[in-house]
Image (tube, rainbow, N blue to C red):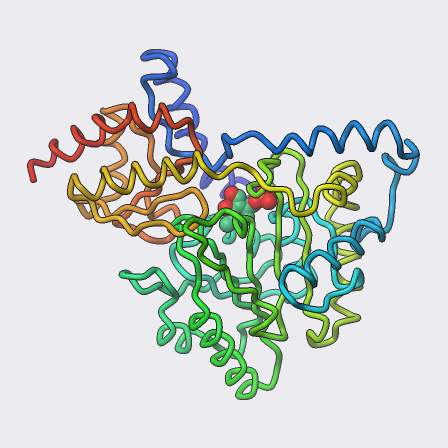
Length: 395
Ligand code: PLP
C-alpha cells in the first residue's frame, strides 16, 4: 500500500539497516568489545556539562508556557538575536536575527532550504564523496542531484569538472566542510574559486545560483586549521549549521540557517524559509533546545578523544600501507581500498569484526569510511584486526 516512490526509498535504505543489524548480530556472538564498529557518525563524546546546567536553569527560571509553547516558525526572536550577535562577532560578519532561522538540525535546515529554493527539475551540484542523504533531500523536492568529482589527491572539488557541470538548470551548489566522509576542510582558494565560477555562470545564464555550505562539523577541527567562512566569499550564500556533532546533541534536532543579508530577494527567501519550516511539519525547531543554545553559545565538546583516535588510526593504517588522507576535521577517515571493489572490501573486513562503510555509499567507489567517534579503547583493540585485514591481501 505504500507509494512507489517510498518503496524505492525503503529498498535503497536497506544497506545501512543491514549494516546496523549485522553489527548487532556480531556483537551478540563475539561480545560488544570484540566488534569494531566504525560505521556510524554518532558522537561518543558526552555533551558539555553546561548543557545540563542550562536545561535545569531554564526549567527552574523561565515561564513554562513560554519554554514549551509555539513561537514564530523561524524560532524565538531573542535566541536568533543572540545567535546573530555571536556569529557576527565570531566571524566578523554582520547578520541580524532576521537572517537566522532555527531548524531541526542540518537535515531539517537543508530540507527547509530546498523547499524554499527549488523548482521541480532544478539541479543541485554536490562534490563526490558526499553525505548520501543529499540525494534524498533533493529528491524530496523533485530536484536532480548532479555529482561532480573531487580531486583524488586533496579531495578538494575538481573545479574544471565543476565548471563543465553547471547548466541553465543549476539552482544550487552544496558543499560540506569539514567534510563527511573525507575530513577535508575546503580551503580559502577553493571557496574563492567556487564563488568566481558561480558568479560567471550567473552572468551567463542570467539567474542566481546559490552556494550552500553544510557545516555540522565546523568546530570539530584539528591542529588549529581554520574553516573559512562562506559569507566572506559569496553573496548568494546560505550556511546550514547544526549542534548534532559540535555539541553531541544529535537526538535533540537543533540547528539553524544563516542567510547572507544581501542574498538575492532576501525578503522572499526569509519568508519562504519561515513557511517551509511550518508546512514541512517541523513547525519550529524544538523550543527547549533553542533556549539551551542561547545560554551556551561558545561552549565546546572535548575533542581530545577524536584527535587521539585520528592520530592512532592514521599512523597505523599508513604504516600498514593503506592509502589515507590525514583528516583535518570531522571524525571520519576516508581510506583507499587495496582492491577496487569497496563493497567486497567491507565484506572482507567483517571477517575480522571490522564494520566499515563502502565509499560507493558516498558516490566514491574504491574507498571506505571509518567513523572514529568511538571509544579510544575500541580503536586500540581494532589495530591488530586492520593488520590481519591488510595481510589477508598478501601485499
Ligand atoms: N550533513 C552532514 C554532512 C552530516 O554528516 C549529517 C549527519 O551525519 C547531517 C548533515 C545531518 O545532521 P543533523 O543531525 O544535524 O540533521
